[in-house]
Image (cartoon, rainbow, N blue to C red; front, side, top):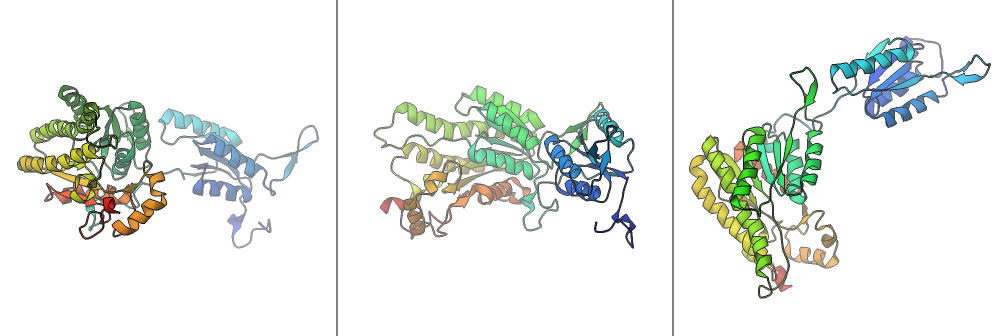
Length: 412
C-alpha cells in the first residue's frame, strides 16, 4: 500500500494476522495469498501441487514490503511471510488433520481460514437445456467398444462429462486403464463416504478387456463383465473397427478380408447380441448405436475398399433388421455414418492441398468437421430418452458429401 496509516478502510493493513488458504496453488487461492501478504499477513498456503506452492511462497517471501529482520548473529534476514503445506481436501480426516496441524505450527496459530479449494463440474451448467435435454445423461451406463483410441476414446470422455458411467471395452488394457484413470479424475466426480468413514471418489469408468474378433463365448464373457460393472447397460456403442488395406478386390487375401469383416460386422453383431439379450431380460429397454461410415453408402464407395465398404453397408442393414426385431423390447437400434472428420488419424491428410480442393467441389459445407460436437452430440441424443421414438435409422454426418447432384470424388 502507498501508506501504512489506516483511513476509512482499516482492513487495508492486516499486519501480524496469520491466514490459511486452501486451494492456494492457482486461481483465486493464489491471488488471495499474494494480496494478503502485501497487506501484512503471514500466509499458510495449502494445496496438493507442492511445486506451485513453493514457487508462490518464494514470490511472497521476496515481496518488497517484507521488512528485513536482525538475526542473532547480527546479519539482516528477511522474515518468512509464507509457508507451503501439502493439503488434499479429498483425503480422509486423519490426513487432513495432520496437514492442519502443520499449518497451525507454521506460525504458532491461525487467525483466519479461507476455504477456497474447489472444483467445478465439467459442464457449464447442470441445468438441462429444454431444447437439448441430452446435454446431461446423469446415471446412464454406456458400453463403448474400440474405446482405447480414436472416436471410441472421445466418446468415453464426452459421455463421462455428460454424467454417464462408462464401460470401456478394447484389447489394449494399458490404454483403457489410462483412459479410465483420466475419467475418474474428472472434476464432476464427487467424493463419497466409504463404510470406514474415508472419502472416496465415485468410479465413473471401468475397463473391460474385449476382443471383437474373438469367438462368441469369449465375447459373451466380456459382455457379462461389462454388464456387472454397474449392474446394467443403458446403451451400447459399437465403435470398434478397422479399415484394412486399399487394394483391388482381385488382390485381397482371404485372411485380410476375414479380419475386416470379423472386426466390423461379426464383432458388432456378437456384442449387440449378448448386450441385447441382457437388455431384453432386464425389461428396461435400451439403445444400440452402430458407428458405420459413409463408405457403406452408394455415393461414397471408392475403389480399393471392398472389405471395409461392404462391412459398413452390412452394418447398416444389421441396424435396420435388429431395430425390427428388438423394438418390442423397447430396444432402439440406429447407425451413425460419419464422413471425413478432423482427427489424430486424418490430421496429415486434411492438410493436403488436393484434399481441400476436393472438399470445395464435393462437400456442400466446404469443410471437414470435428467429432465434437458433430458426432458426440448425436450420440448423446441417441442415448437420451428423448430419442425414444427413433429406431432403425442411418444418421449421415458428412456435411452433405453424399447428397445427389454433386460431383462424386472418384470422378474428379
